[in-house]
Image (tube, rainbow, N blue to C red; front, side, top):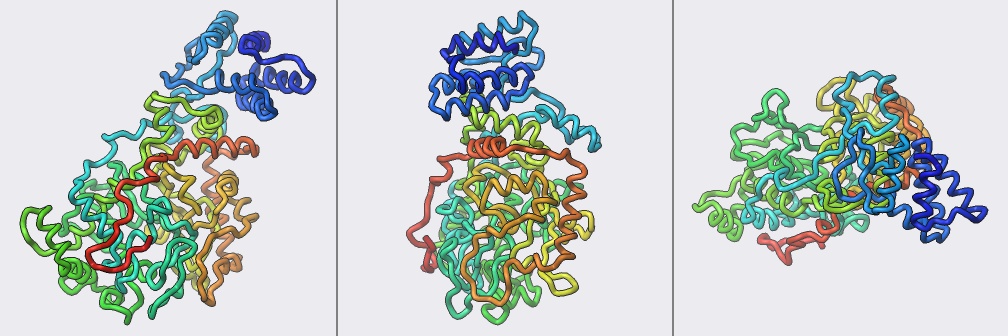
Length: 553
């Protein structure tokens, strides 16, 4: 829009054009708008707003706050706004053949993933809005939940009976009070008590090692399109056969699962640090150590027998099933999955309301959305309705804690996807996380290396430089151990490998430079991905569980 037309709009809204400092700021906004630089124009108005100018605040609202209407077509002469005055001014601009006031909703374009991966081409495309907005999450995106089964799963989720030493439940690492996570970078599993940062080693089998990866949040794991689980994707739908599943225990076709999520629940109970315990501590841990997982004497059958021996669980499953049969491990995990699907669903965010065209975003969130789906290139990985491509990317995440394995020299490490595919090209690549409620589920990263979301975003812009300048900020429960949580940084060779993997990944992406104000706008958009109602929860923490074991609150 030409400066004269924009000034007409500003004056019609009552924005003063006089006064030395405000006039200078206003002129900056006018010049930027004339060049199509809407971020600078937005920033100029925001500075006036922050200086206490009520008219500037109104201007931000009238021009940059998009209504819940249809997206403006790229060929449309006038974009939709709420104000008749602004619509008239925009119409005048169209007659004069100048750029219209734009909706914050990016125009529909080809998704970058549909184009050949050519760095120069990708860089040229990254100048404007290049990604389509996804469809909103709605009822059709999720499996229908059996609420009766979910009510059984609710009790099992909080019951320590499923751990080898009967001292930890699923809820400890995925607690409602901690927004379905555990609030720390690397948690303590079996052999500890308490929640979050206050969790401490306790008991005769006190923990001596951290869980090697950050506990992922559970939001929207009931979505139908999810096809991969765990940071390294070691459980996934077979890409060559949608009816089959690839698991750490090979094909599980002899078992009847309701969902891939139910399969996922079979594995934390086998983890030494998470739930099983150390060999010699209990029969479950011994079975895992001896690789007895399947069959009547396997770890899964032993756990199922524990649950079956509790009359309340046996009766609940019998009533649900309509006949009295022994409780199987698949019954247990199907129930837990149903509970997770029902309890941890987040699809009523401001962003989803915007996508449904029932509400507008704030000016800051709207500009952050333009960056996210445009120049910042976030949507090249955080795509689709779940804001995740469910693929694996090497983003130079700092190595924290014990890692999943050790290299030839005894240093701890975690090579991520490469440990599953055994392809060196996949080393240090981890799954793209989904983003609903993301600001409530830190620390972030597969090892929780970042507790500052802005530091995390700056790192993502240039992972190689970010790794080199990383400052320790992990949140870790107290643990008496000889292992240094930051010891992996002493292995220069491992750091070089992580950096090289990130450099290769970034060579296929445009280099993005953002100012601090733009980082703030991205954070504002991420805030718009929060479903406040979901954080309150539905069922809450049960007063007691059928086993009679303590429930962590």
